[in-house]
Image 1 (cartoon, rainbow, N blue to C red):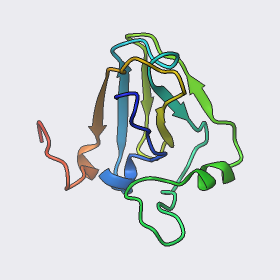
Image 2: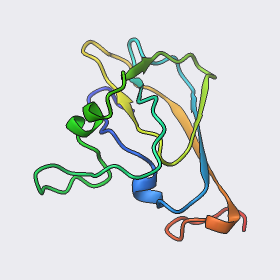
Image 3: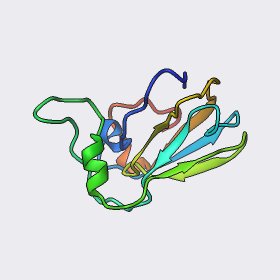
Image 4: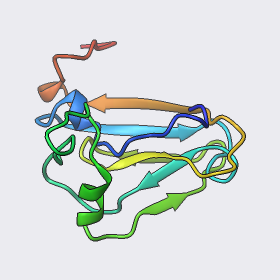
Length: 128
C-alpha cells in the first residue's frame, strides 16, 4: 500500500457478498504501522454489513467515519512485523492505517478462504 493513498473503512463482505462463509488471512511481508501503513481495526463483532456512502453519495464498499464512530468502541492501531498474520471474517471492519510522516510502502499478502457451500459468484476459484 503506497503511503500517499488513504484506506477507507470497509468490510470485505461489501464486495465479496454477505451470505458467504469466509476467513481472510492477512500477512505483513514488511514491518508496518510505524513508518509504513499498518491496519486500523475495530474490535467489534458485526452480524451485518454497515451502510456505505454518506448523505446520499455512494462510496463503493467504504463505510464513513461517522458510522465507525457510532459503533462506540476504541479503534485499534496495530504495528505488524514481517511475518505477523491476522485472520478475520468478511464482516470485520478495518482500513489501511496511514499516519503523518510515514515514508515507506507496506507489503502484505492477503488470501481469502471460502466455504464451498457459499462461494461468492463474483470470484474465480482456484479449485472447486
